[in-house]
Length: 343
Length: 256
Image 1 (spheres, rainbow over the protein chains, first blue to last red):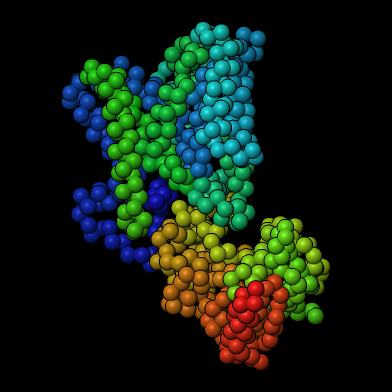
Image 2 (tube, one colour; image 1 turned 90 degrees about the vertical axis):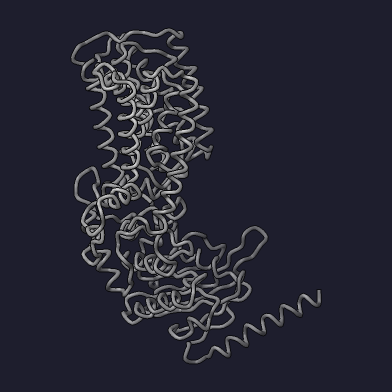
């Protein structure tokens, strides 16, 4: 199932390299089956071409900025969500942490704390939320869907209470603003950096291996001695912190901190990105690069339809259909991989 | 007594009112293969779970290398060198062969980020499987793509290379065809010839494991009812013991 960058490393010598004799087309088809990231990236490129043909303003600098900022936010949250999904859990509260963290930063700064420590404080609060989500799931054995649904509402109420329901403005300090997502370039760089770092963590570190093992065979992994509870809690924390970071970056990019921003909308977009990108909701398998491309595809869809003047109502129908179709294709491709289409 | 590795004395285990083991004393010598036979429900799995440290016995003693030992947990038992191979094999389908073999004892580059040394694990997994005579297409394939026998062989190889002193094989050929079973039993035979590891093999198909067991213990209704060296007994004798058990059971049912 999980075919990825790691597998493009040298293959054992005793295996004949059959691919070389095949035609180019077959090899492209093969890699589409083999690398999940390739299929979603291919879909993204096709969409960009379609929209550019029908709406020439699509690749204008202004629109790219708009699109990149939106897609980057989703991609950052999706990276964390992928880790939790691979563990076989889900984090619904992350969209509310997205709204909470920048408020913590704002009030900490108002209380006289310099900006960078204030940002860190916002992320620490996010990590506490992740820790609580993890404990509810692992120690108290509340299914993560319900546990994080509870924290979703708790955090939302908390953010609305401390803010009084009104947006605030983060003071502009050029260097801080530009570093933390103040323009779309810095935000997309954050998203790319996070995607690459966490893909590496997932594929090349012990943490990633144990994350996949936890979701792939919970009982088996614990029989071998993997600390499955620890791994789950850790990934809930990572997911929350990435949600808080995305919210902080957006606060600087948009120039406003809105208690009603984020929420279920951005959380579902992140989960949809992860799933479209090839992460299984059942756990045990996933890709962060795939989720990154998934976020871009969703961003392109949303932005392209807006440019074409298609209504938001219709967009939701198309988005729903797109998620179902990609899921169907993913299930099919997984079956093909499972019967030996891969190796 | 110095060559004894694992011994239990009058071990009993009950779950509430249900008594799973009544009085079990077994002994495993170094380099020996002990066949533990018994019908479904005789207590084989309970006994295995006590030996792996998963269950604590209700009463009785356990000795490891001559020392009285209380197994605190599965990882404690494993740290002593008691390696179970579970029926579910504890393999992760989404991971490839060498990641499964090195799960929880990964080879890593130094440093705080615990980066996996895939090259070293791949090489060593290939070498170990070759040494044990396990043939698979490649150590890079996902474990889900291998057959039941190959998966079992990899689970055994993983335990052996975790420096096992005692290998506990729970129904290693369950749900396997003749060809696959033969492959696993050949593997156990080769391990026996090396003589580095002592093995308890649980089975109810005793004809299959009879040849290479040094000793056979028969577990019936939570008690060891038979303990003979293989060369002093025969498949026929075991069959008659089991048949008698069935007869006795039938009479009991008739009476009640």
